[in-house]
Length: 87
Image 1 (tube, rainbow, N blue to C red):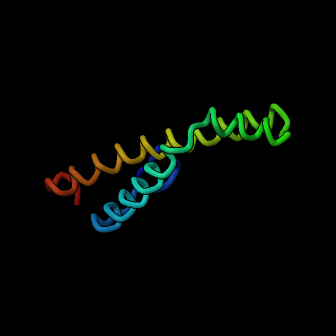
Image 2 (image 1 turned 60 degrees about the horizontal axis):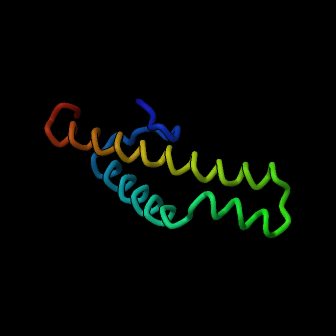
């Protein structure tokens, strides 16, 4: 069983793949409104240490990127399975 960019295993069933894809898409949509630069500035304004504020912003960006790539990978897996290439 292969893994997605975010480290999760690719589900076996088509239904599970579609469910996971929908979940990731909802998460990415909600994250799109959260600008990492804004997160960093808010942390700095609230007195957080520079390194901690930067790490938080980078974590947000990394999570978004991994989920985005996982969505692309899941769509590909769903297409393969729907066409009968993978059972």
